[in-house]
Length: 122
Picture 1 (tube, helix red, strand yellow):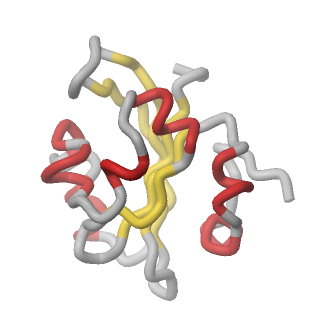
Picture 2 (picture 1 turned 60 degrees about the horizontal axis):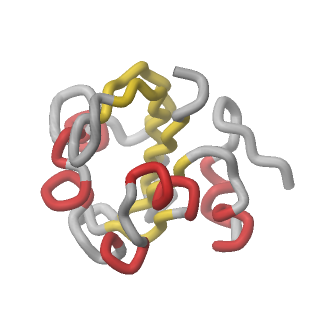
């Protein structure tokens, strides 16, 4: 299974093993409806400088990435039952401003929502 940032289906992210997600060349952050992080791959850990052990179980938008707690990212997960959107973004927390592309994924039948982080294409 080859997962690409621009076209990986939500179902494939949900079905992927941790090893598969850790091998991807982009960040993968999965979180539950309550905002708690359930998936944090190796690429995102290295790019953000945060160990997965320190991120899993914490609230994504309040504790891990409060720079995404706004109408462009966090609010869209609340407002849209089905979401597949890519947007340019600048990460600012705990790092110099870093331009990235974010892909926001949510489906009505998926317990996990995803933020994909493409640091190379920005």
